[in-house]
Amino acid sequence: MAMTTNEQAQWHAHLQTPVLYNHHAPIEVESASIQSVDLNGIMSTPRAAVNEERVLILTPLRDAAPYLSKYFDLLSELTYPHDLIDLAFLVGDSTDDTLAVLSAELDRVQKRTDKIPFHSALIVEKDFGAIFGQSVEERHGFKAQGPRRKAIARARNYLLYTALKPTHSWVYWRDVDIQDSPGKILEDFMDHNKDVLVPNIWFHRYENGRDIEGRFDYNSWIESDTGRKLADSLDKDVVLAEGYKEYNTKRKYLVTLGDWRNNKDEEVELDGVGGVNILVKADVHRSGGWKHIGQILTRHMLMVRQGINFPCYAFENQAETEGFAKMAKRAGYQVVGLPNYVVWHIDTEEKRGNLGSRPAY
Image: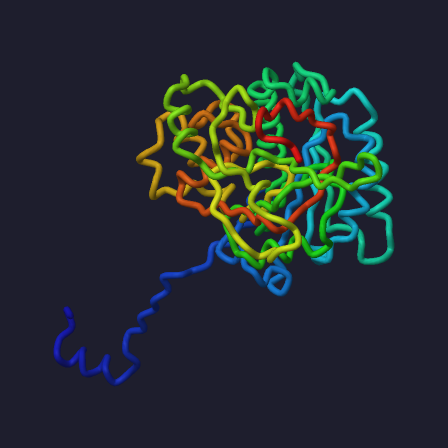
């Protein structure tokens, strides 16, 4: 612009001044300690196997040695591609050989040369100082329920946050003492495309040559007006233990709604879930449903920002899996039960009296 007319004419006889625009010059990161994770491609869809979606199977264990052989037999029969499945276990407060038997069973399965071995397996050890024993009376007694459920919630959370990886699309919580379940259970559940989904949990009891089909899990339920009034009358730190005569909520239980002979794809909306079998979209555990956190008490906000986990305190007077369901619903997620899709649990010889007028069978 400071050129004379003659200088401009001389310049324009040659090339114009080059102008280079590069707003996206690459940054080369050579440090091995820096990693990048892109979660945009992680999906949870009904076409999970086709989309090669990774599944994390989580199982907390305590004094579980007698059940592990059957557990791995059933796990080996899963038809979902095993190279897309990661296993993780938390062993805590065990007094038997749970850790040794688990290690041996995992080693046996992972050394197979067919399509049975899983993508990976992780064992987490963490003791919480168990205050109740493992007998039926101690585990299922009414007084044990609040402290016991809080302790189990802590174990679940430690396991979840240790094992969950960015590549996981689904989290499948599966108890060790399942007696029988379909090999296609993962595909069957994924077909429903729900945020949180549970089946019905029954058991077989053989008396006098008869096969009695018993109802096991009273922790999957639909809330009632009686239950809401009862919760309103309790101190907010009280954990309302469902399925006991001391707290008659008149809730509608999933175990009383269905029958395995009927349509297995029928759905019902739930307010509480049991922990025997839960399929969760991994993003439910990762995110917290921000559109609803304004309604949540301050002390619960941190939990929601971390994702929906298992409260080890009274959340709306519920803890562990039932508190998880309450928290998920508060955050806007759908919690669904399948009344006619039955997974068979071992018979724990639960006494009818624990349920008052609600018999186990």
